[in-house]
Every structure is written in C-alpha cells, then in structure tokens.
Amino acid sequence: MAILTIKSLTKYYKDLRALSEVSLKVKAGEFVTVIGRSGAGKSTLLRCVNRMIEPSSGLIEFDGIDMRSLGRRDLRKARTRIGMIFQHFNLVPRQTVIENVLHGRLGYKSTLQGSFGIYSDEEKSHAVDVLARLGLAEQMHKRCDQLSGGQKQRVGIARSLVQDPRLILCDEPIASLDPSSAKTIMDHLHRISRDMKITILMNLHQVDVAIKYSDRIIGIREGGIVFDDEPRRLKKKIVAEIYGSDADDILFEESPE
Amino acid sequence: MTSIIEVRRMFRRREAIALASFALLAVLTLGSSIITSFDWPSCLRSFPKAFSWLAANFIPNGKALANAPKILARLAETVLVSVMATVVAAALAFLMALLGSKTTRPHPVASGLVRLVASLCRNIPVVAWAMIFLLSFGQNVLTGLLALFIGTFGFLTRAFMETVDESAESSVEALWASGAPWAATVMQAVVPSVMPQVASWMLYMVETNIRDATLVGILTGTGIGFLFDLYYKSLNFSSAAFVVICIVAVVILIEAGSNALRRVIL
Image (spheres, rainbow over the protein chains, first blue to last red):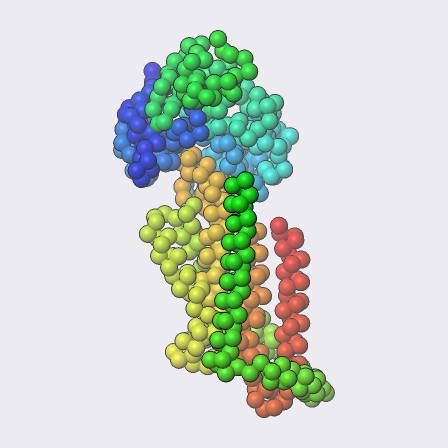
C-alpha cells in the first residue's frame, strides 16, 4: 500500500521551474533515495511533501491525507507523523541532547506544555530508550555543541523517532559527515526502515551509498524524474544521464555494472 | 603580448581613478571651508589657548568635591533610567523581532510593518525624540526615559531580528517540520539560541544609553546632564569637569562589568 502518492507535482520559484509534473508512489516501509545533481530539485521535492515549501500545483497524499488541502492546524497535525532529518542537523546547539530529542514531541503537546517544556514520564522514557538504541546513552546530558557531527545527526534521528513517524524525510543526511560516521548513520536509518517499518525518503549525493541501501532509487534531472526503479537496474548510462554526461567518470570508482 | 598591454592599461586606469578621487576630496574640503568661511590657520592657533584654559579651569577643586554626593545621586538616577529604558525596550523589541524576523514571522505583512516602525524609531536620533517629547510631556524624567526607550526599541528590534535569523533559523525549520506550534517553537528553539546575543545587545544598549542620557538630560533638565548644564552655565567649571570625570568613570566601569558578564554568558 502506498503511504505517499505524489501526482503531477510542479513547483515554480517566480519564473524558474524547479519541479515539473513529478509523479511517484512510495510504499509503506520502503527505503527510497532520490539522486540528482545539485539544483535538480531534490530538496524542493522533499520539502513539498511536508509543505515546508508550498507546491505550485499537483497532488500530495500522505497516509490517505490530501496534504495540500490542509489548513494550518491540520497541517501541523499531519507533520507530527513525518520526521525530518537535515544535512546540518538543525539542533538547538545550546541545549542538551535529551532536550533536543524531546523537541520531537512538541507537535503533540498543548502550546502551554510545549512552551515550558513539560513532558510526561512516558515521553521521557521513550526518548531515553531511543537514545540508548542509537548509542547516545552516555551523551544524554551533554550540550549538543559539544558533540561530533555523527553524534549530532544521531540526535536528529532520535528527535524524529520520538515523533512516532510513519515517514522520515532525509535531506542529505550524510553530506557533512566523514565516511565512518556516514556509514553509522546510514546503518541506523536502514535498521529503522527494516525493523520499525518506517518509510524513508532520502536525498543523497553518493550514488554508491544509494545503491547499497535503497529499495528503490529515483533519479531526477532538471525537475523531472528520469529514473524510478530498483538499484540493480541503475546502469552507468542512466547515471550519466541523471548527472549530465561529463559526470560519468567522476562518480564511480567502481562501476555498478 | 596583448595581455601585457591590457594589464598595463588596467593599472593606468586604476591610477587615474585614485588620482581623480583624491582631487575630488580636496576640492570638496576646500570648497566647504570657503563656503562656511572656515579659517584653518586661526582654528589651529586656537588649540594651545583652548588647552591652557582647560588646564586652568577644568580641574575639579575642593568646591567640586563638596558637590560629590549630589553628583553621584544624579548619576545613579541617570544609570537607573538607562537600565529601565533598556529592559523595557528590550522586552518589547524581542516580541516585535519575533513578528519581524524572516524565521518566525507569522506573516510577511507583519514583518514589513515591524521593520518600518523599527527603522523610524532608530533613524530619528534620541536627542530629536527628546525634543519632540519635550513639547508634549514637559521637562521631566518621563520625557528622557521615553526618548531613550524609543531609540533603544528601534535599535534592539533590528538587532534581535538579525540575531533570530542568524542563530535560530535551522532549529526553527526542524521544529516546524515536526508540527510544533509557534509559541512552543519560540520558547524551546528561539529563546535558548538567541539568549546570549540578546543579553549582549542589552548590555551594549545600557552603555550607549548612559552616554545618550547625559545629552538628553541637558534638554529635559534631569539626571546628570542637567547638573552638568547647571554648573557649566553658572560658570562653575571645576564642578562641571567633575561631572564629566564621573560620567567617564561610570561608563568605563559599566563597560568593564558588561565585558566580564559577556565572557560568562557566551
């Protein structure tokens, strides 16, 4: 069953067309990566799903909800079930790990409780569990500006997990990490998708990483989908098409085929 | 070959521009002194005389020191008024900054309005505000307080808006993406992120306001400015000098204090 259906999604920035007639379906529990050059529209596509960017036209259906029809309040409610992970982690650096993780619960709380950071014991113990699972039990009371990049991203993952999401959007989650932290993060996300059946939609720059982890890869070029299939069908020729032919020899140390 | 010629031409053009700019500045300076009939030689000649007068008259003597309790009381009043104006203005400016900042504004129209009001408050000098309020509120502390408040409010709104955009944008994006309400996002993400900068700007404004309060006090007949004006006009120069020394001491003291505080916060 599709948890996310996008039909004819188009986005204009003034006269510039960032996305044109994009249609795709993501099944519940699927791990889907979107690849493409910088500026191809990956980030716009991802942010149109939770309407952090307003689409110009088209349909976005998440978990049976027509996202574009929602008013402010209902949109907030729908967003609580969509986690988001960012390239630059987007944490509050001066707060502790546990405080940042609990921010993931704010969407469920009343304005008063949320404003003063009043969380239930259940929420707190959930947050502690999630942190332990991500190997951050020791770091719980450290301020986030004292963590390494990989640890910060794990806090970001924990924050989205306490939302109890059905879908996690990942915008270049490993683009500012070293290779070993990047692998840890990808392994965690893979486990989350496999064990918790949470759907993952991810933008990625590294084609080899996309091939290794994804159930499905979507290639976009100039705002349109040019490839949408299993990783094994992503041939060198298609990668060249996605990235523009000259990128062919830069992107692969080992050819997938 | 052609490239060398081009480079030479480029350098020659640059020299010509520098020369022309210098000539323009010289003409402007000369022109203005002629128009205002400013007499350079007599200006320079008056320096030694001015300094010897300062040395003779502007030294606090026993009479001035006898005025110390009065001076210190007025100075305390000035400092307190500055602190009060800053704190109240900062509270209001923070709310306005939330409405005005690109990161947290509820609507672009609110943002435009806030920016307009803030820049109006900021760009009219505090002394001009004091003169405006002088007519409606008369010569009293309220007038000075109001003038400082308006100027501080304008400046801090602008500073806080930039601080919010700079240090809270990314975490605000994350919380909005998770469905957090506006107030909770502000309290949980914006406030902790901007607190050190906000405190730092407030300390800066307290310092600035003590300086401005002196000027405003001359106009409104309150605080330390009034006392300076009084002594000066009654030709009690040694007491006026003592007032100046006290102001400088307090400004330096407050600046040292706020620097120490900044180091702790940041």
